[in-house]
Image (cartoon, rainbow, N blue to C red):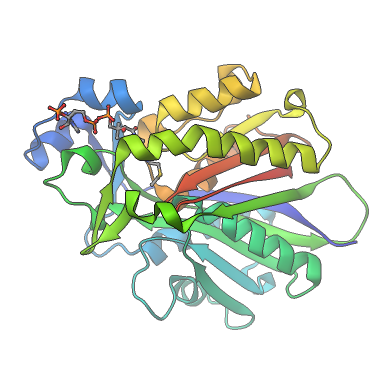
Length: 314
Ligand code: ACO
């Protein structure tokens, strides 16, 4: 039976870094490092340079994932890119990435599920790899979120950053333990208005989002563990969507995981929406924390509302 194995991971962050104080000064915000870091854990974020596109960042992340896998771009026959900040309505950002990587066969498309986009993209790619629709897929989360922020709304503009992450998934048919074990996708449009892009800018009812976050994430995590007959104690790494340290800590506690088993980047990246999980994965693989054979749990919630979880054996 076909399985999707994670062959490589990659991440890209724009060169420009703004601390909370620098952001406040640059955009004349009535805020403080203490307010932002105490409520969210965010200390700084990266910002795409003028002219640096979502596709540019995504392609850079893909190059690292390909190199780590020892794969050539010519092997890739599917590119699935999750973003809420595509470079244009069409061509899709995935197709732009395909061109940047010099790939001229197979197929590519974007997925829109806000901050849950990467979990959705992994779910779709895994189904297509298992069905034989493709053999080798780049699965990407890439965002230029700072382009859709209202810099007069201090309640949202301090929360987000830019970047991209990618994984290379390969279909394997030999028996083995490694690969995407399962994905669990959910949405409920009744809550669409609490986190949306309106008039081209992010609008969020932060408290409302917070209220939904932990319970929905916990139920997706329970579902993922039950589907694989696994216990909380089997999870070696939690790689959560990086929106807010308080939500991340609450999920770590629910799983009974010590803090060092939870991969955290929100302090340095802020919330990079669909890019946050693959960026965190890339960092933890690069620095040797996540190793082959480790069981990794990913979870996210975002606009839609959308939420979900994925379990993978690296
Ligand atoms: N600096 C200083 N004061 C601020 C700022 C700021 N950056 N932003 C808001 N305030 C003020 C408000 O004006 C308000 O002042 P008031 O009491 O005088 O009216 C006060 O702080 C409290 O505002 P709230 O919005 O109620 O602040 P809250 O304590 O809820 O914290 C936060 C806001 C951090 C956004 C919190 O609600 C939260 O973390 N929510 C979850 C949001 C989230 O994680 N979203 C992302 C998940 S989905 C996704 O990733 C897209």
